[in-house]
Length: 602
Image (cartoon, rainbow, N blue to C red; front, top):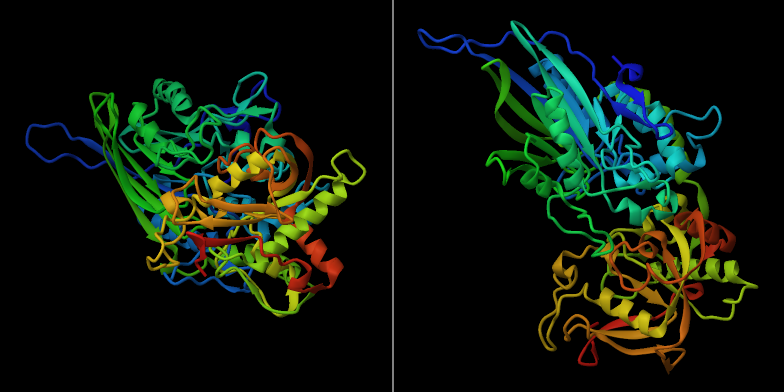
């Protein structure tokens, strides 16, 4: 049954927001079991199962829109809410639906061509527009509450609010506050009451927490409108309130990993991956559904520093490949329910088939998007691939840079910056992208640029560009001259992901991987001349990097000359369509190479 939002929400001072007051009441659960033993009063027990997903990123079906085929990977994983629905149905049948809760920890409406299509091509915000496929699927499956992820903000607040309106469940964000009033802009929590035969009901509170990095990554949409304090401080404020309201069980759904680290360095005072910190620092939490990090954690036990009690954390694998189960056992003692134990485990989506109810529900939307991504926009003279793009200057990445350079040059024509040289930043997002020789489709180009980033022009000096390149070059593992080179171990130094390694086009430079990080850039030239520290450059960069994503030096604080809201992916498709033919001679350039003591590695 859909949640009656009128009972759930009370309007706050923030436009369109609400604060959770009370949840739905479940049907009576199974009778509590008596405790054996002569002369003792029967002990009432109750078993609750909390199910959770996270980082769905628009995956409804086990389908790879970029390859136009069923999803496959070497590990044999399967993806999509249609599979999760089957798992959820089984758990509800085993445990009794009235004894279960279904949550998600965020990043729902961005990540696949399916979600892009209903945000940009046939947007849900249009008058009489469609219902978002993720809202349709999650409503049908019967989610109880969903935490906001950072990617919920990628398409702007209007799209997020429309999605929220279409959901039969609340979007929770206790640390997503109105910037002016500092009141919650979304419901902070959700409470559901479970009836137990012969005993008082069990009240379960779900606190939703999102990621402070939204303030950086989607600055263009949220600056001056929303603010995102730390997870730890907001949990410390809300958990006691939930307990005082009679919550017997407190579950946190947190779009935040467990590592205690931040990708944005010291740009924000709040930790990006703070879920374990919350467990450690804030008393009164029983379990945390973890998201954001795209990791798989069946069960992590963290001891609370104040109470000595263990808090159980679990993070199911992203893209609906896993379902977390928290099995919560309660006993009724001294007039109140007490959590006796919590265990976490995972269920694998690859072990079941799609729920036909979900495939029927969204079959038309899926077919529409498949037709869209298979539109032919041009031809390629040769196959372009990202297989070696992490460690060799690859023409396919140069294509991104060339498009960005052209767009920025045109945007700045006639301005005071028109005469400045344009450099461009691009990253090897995927290791498997390929633009085949012959016909080129939207899905081919989309696989090259999988994020919905937009383009920004910044103003940097030569010294700042050098510092930027040095920071980027720390991606490579230091490898002595003469030592064997294993390309599988050459990159991702200190866990840095591929998307935080940047090419910079328009210059020539060597990266000497025999040297320590910070001293690797050699022979940095512009049109054959050494780059002067005071020289000025226009820097074409994606909005994630421009706002501080990856903590690259100087770029976030550099003067902004121009920005737009059209996705870089769209610009690539427009460029390819206008050209008609993708020929590397029109965009490929040799900008950088790896060396060791002056000798090329490859």
